[in-house]
Figure 1 (cartoon, rainbow, N blue to C red):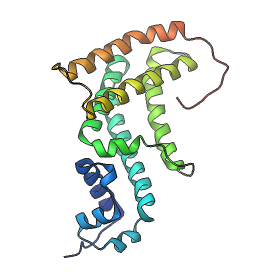
Figure 2 (cartoon, rainbow, N blue to C red):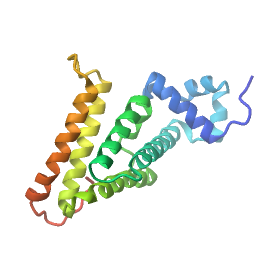
Figure 3 (cartoon, one colour):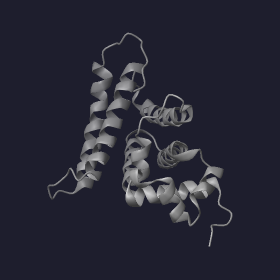
Length: 200
């Protein structure tokens, strides 16, 4: 029987499940309609074709990630906040692999909402790192470093890039320890830049 009372939230939740189960490239209007047990044209009541679905799903994924990261960091500061943030990030990538991959794809120039939510995640990292009293430029270097560690580790793990029989969680904790220890080096050695502020 057709799906009764379908709304955009249900549609996005189902599309996200499909992405996690089969990969984002397998999320098409036809596959989504089949999973929802509806006719494909019915999707156009909620989305503007496949590009519209991808855009809304990216926004949905970023919102989900931001909520998880915020919840992990709230009430914490310093090293504890950095570790909680990082562990929540990796947990999201592990539990929502398709959705996580989609949040990393570069948005089109019209996707202001994607940039806005992405900016909130950056701002959250900056607030967490404020504990370490970094200069503006040093803080951006640190944000880039943390993002590189988190995305690099999550991506390599998803692609099966860690083949040795070593505990990945131990490796991840050691990386975080090294990053935290290195914040003092970033603070003390960061050269003054020209004042330009690009996206970290």
